[in-house]
Length: 440
Image (cartoon, rainbow, N blue to C red; front, side):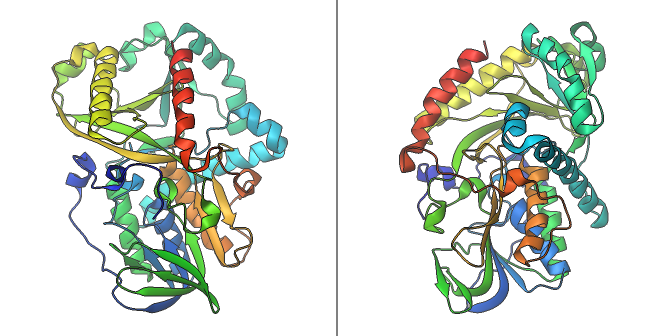
């Protein structure tokens, strides 16, 4: 495999809280040669959603995961099922795709949240659900002014305006901290991503999909009537293939994808359960999932077991020294935003890769000049809903039929390559520096 980061980025999850909340339910390993109609590379939310929806349509589908179930971003994220998936601002979406294209994207954002909601209900998946929508917190007076000015755009795009809370009302709403105001958009909810992943896998298997773990695809080649996917234990022949590897994509599966994704690290810490007196001391008692207005944002939430999750962007390298720097920084940022909790014990800490695209929107479609090959990836840190949606969308596209869900033109545009090729990670240095400067 040709991947962008040091090998440690693709190692074990480490001290991830989510892994302790689900029983070990391994999938079989591919140890023979097989054939199927559709093969999926990647066992995260995109791949599982695609496998489930294809199997429900009666398609013979097999999924190959390189590691264990829930190993990648789908088992490491913050559990925010919310609007998002693109990093492109509204003005850029409007300029590129016009009013209709923007409306298509907004419709898909809402539909993605609704899809997850329906999957949880239809398959009776218990995910420790909480939070009524998501809350955005202004980290400067200027950000609060922009937040108030953006109400009309939200009303136009989503048919509903966020609920605004001024600075003097934050604490009484359980949002105590150094912010200048908040806006709550009543779309979305928080969940335990590993419980969602496990439930999605069970549903896909029940529908007839074959799921394999520890079956990394080492070679992808054209074969008579479709494609051949080689693994250490066997080979899978398929008429069509869906690449659903997101931030863990290999640049040579196929060569076309080289340089079209830019994985970035995100780091998370989780505290011990907090008592009511400890929560009251900080003034944060809300169950809302929240994030701030920084370019290099923080995201956080109080979970049902009263542990507190806090996340931020990670380092640019995955070495012991770099990881130690990030460990110090995330603790310092946590203490600065929640000073009453400086003595709280951090019990879990981990990192994972999210996937950026050069156009700052996801890609879902056919791979050019590769008949029978498709890809769905690039959710910019908001993949719980949009990855699930992309998998369901691609289940139709792979079958060659009109999608039953909105397929925004923003997601159909072929992603260009990032500059610098295999050295493209270097572009993150100035981007992070600028982000830190603008966040002051």
